[in-house]
Length: 239
Image 1 (cartoon, one colour):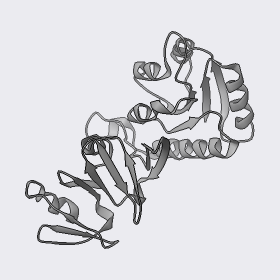
Image 2 (cartoon, helix red, strand yellow):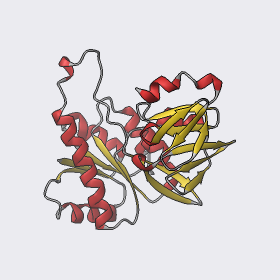
Image 3 (tube, helix red, strand yellow):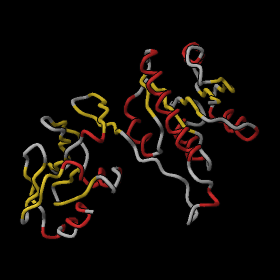
Image 4 (tube, one colour):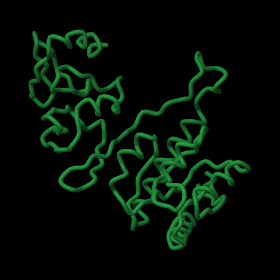
């Protein structure tokens, strides 16, 4: 994978280059110290992956991303965790908090390689039924909980419970409390897997054990109510 480093800190370039040297499927294609330089570079060169800082002079990393019509894969490398949610809304592959170790960098690189391989295996755009680009549903999300940035694997999330402007994100036996609304999760989570069944509940279809009346029982024994305005979702769960 051809990689571009975009960061205004020379030390960040040194760290990424040193890590890349030990990962055979990553190749350095260029280095830019400003996002504006990266725009010029990409006008004449193609890359598969960008390691992108956020807080840079003139143009931030996220504003730079919004200007790209055909985005390469992106791994954010930032010292600030508060931009994580906005970054994942722009469909970045991963979010590395500086300073990061090699094992965490390798995990992000492997994730990018998996998406890159999947993209190469998809049909050409001309063969798709409508003007569209292949969409890869996220395998994980990041949430803020107890002043930490927590990575959650979606296939381990059983359901979400609304508490006003907070949401409990439940796994089989524990939960994380995050300052978000259930509607914001509904916009972010893949609709093929997560279904809203009540104004206060959203669940992962894979963990439904059975439905009885207005109650949905999950495989961990938890029972959730189904709102009368959401009864049509029974067919979506069964489908």
